[in-house]
Length: 209
Image (tube, rainbow, N blue to C red):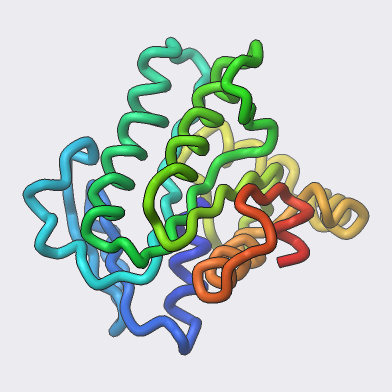
């Protein structure tokens, strides 16, 4: 859902010259700026390394719910997969800005009781130590999908379908706790182009940006 939002903002932004979207299955989306690259193994990018150079930013929006997952499996997808991509990109594009979509409640100490928060915190800390030009951890809470964007996670989409009528009201009254796919995408673009005052951004920081 976040990936759809930031992709839309990239394609609308006149400063963005080209976008490479690495996906596991083709979406069918077409735009003069956009090239989709179908890649099945997100733990190994060696076969497509020759296509990953010359980029200024990476918006890493892949994620999975921890519901019903063991810590080992959740860590495999959340930490191992993310670091595999980041290490490859840092080596090929040392002047790149890497923006990682984490989540509200992430545990930077890596010692809390919440499994998902610990793993996310470990992932953030590893990314912040890598030799990118800049790295920013975005921690949105509730995200209102706009422009027809839908979540691919059934439970998440059901939540948005049922809460849709009240979300605009909630956003109006709690703008620092709720953001939109549009605002999130624009904030990510701004951080990529101009930097951000913090390396870890909560929802209120995203709103300010």
